Length: 366
Ligand code: ATP
Image (cartoon, rainbow, N blue to C red; front, side, top):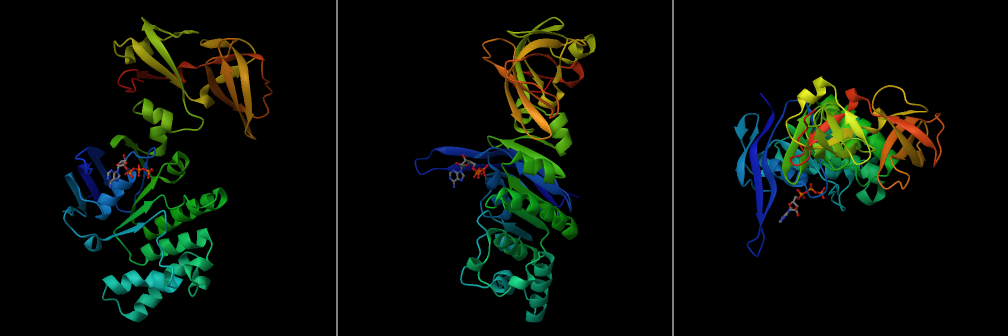
């Protein structure tokens, strides 16, 4: 049985003027014991609201939240076996690290003092902050404060861990380091975890399973690779991957996709996968665009290089079909492959790599 279950959960906020805002709409999710689920999506899509409903900090307008099979909609936050870590850390400034970490246990459990001390020390050791236990939060770096906030959650040995953008206040290097540490920690603790972020790289690197939200609605749930290779719709395809997938508006003409600048012949197999819709979007990931000096194979097109963005081992090359370079698309190529601005080049869009979406609904057809 899933450790944590959201069944058709909806949250409607009613503003003072009576205006209703649907922040989360009909979301269903299951998180198994020990599973690391990353809830990802743009700002305002409903991530924090979802997490706050699970924690009991926000009421549920419709649907059910189950913990270990039991509906907890009406259960007080302190009686849900859940620990939450906030973006702001929310440490008590007048308390030492030790006090910050033991406070929750003293308040909410019958645990004897010596056991609390032992639990706090072992969590501190796990997090590498055992030499900081007597300091106050303002004597700690951002990364250390983050560890204390995690420590405070860990000592409670919860059934579910909720993390709301816990790394967003850290610099890029520390963030990368803490990502790996958090993953190791979560594996060690083997606890169901929901991790909220708007950063798709964080989602891709950390998750067992990603849930992608947009406008309060769940777009897709799957492993990072499933969401990357088989995006359910245009939103997911554009949100996951950096640089983003290239999209071209095309019209279907039999077994051919017609764009303003090029025509793309489909094999009978591919054509059969598409519905009868005429208005489509052709998508291809930058790393799937092949850059050649000459026409080799089908689906290769004359382009001109607009911008070259060196990334070290790779270059992002922005290409245009027309000399005015009004509409560009991007190819990620080997850093040693030399290309320069203004150069004419052949770009191949291999058929086995293309995605096709219905333009109106955004649904992936292939
Ligand atoms: P961010 O990444 O910016 O934190 P988010 O995905 O976590 O965003 P939420 O904070 O869950 O998004 O907000 C979802 C929507 O609900 C937004 O439109 C927000 O304005 C609205 N909202 C959130 N809390 C309230 C509230 N208390 N009253 C009214 N509207 C709210």
